[in-house]
Length: 81
Image 1 (tube, one colour):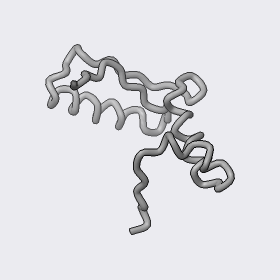
Image 2 (cartoon, one colour):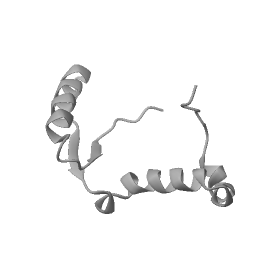
Image 3 (cartoon, one colour):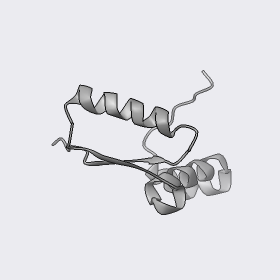
Image 4 (cartoon, helix red, strand yellow):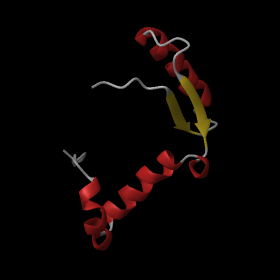
């Protein structure tokens, strides 16, 4: 079953806001989602999905915590290759 994305939240970074919006406008038009996708910028503390990824990444890099989140990780990619 496929799901359509209805809302996209980007982490607020004033220096990237204009570039973010330009990229989003182009991608939304190319995907034919004009008017069907709501997007916004937010600070991490305002949107749990922004800070939760950072929290999991922190746990993964701190060995004692890794076991506590191991069930949440489905794939690991080594970017050093």
